[in-house]
Image: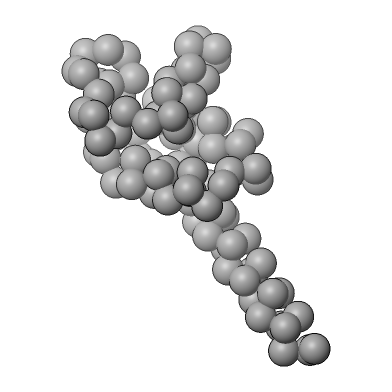
Length: 98
């Protein structure tokens, strides 16, 4: 029984560490506008994001700040592979917070 709790505790710790890493990366991207936008959205929603949302967010985080910002302000179209429900939620957050 203690092994099950240790594994469960370890999984929870891994999930918690992953969420902290994601939040930190979103709040410290290097471009202040993206720190505020992506970091603000993730700061409000990270605790309730599903595993699928976290995976989608990790892919989105690999996009450069300049590219992501250009999509957010409408200077460039969002590529289909990044036009996800999560991206649209972040974009809606931008509209709400501006």
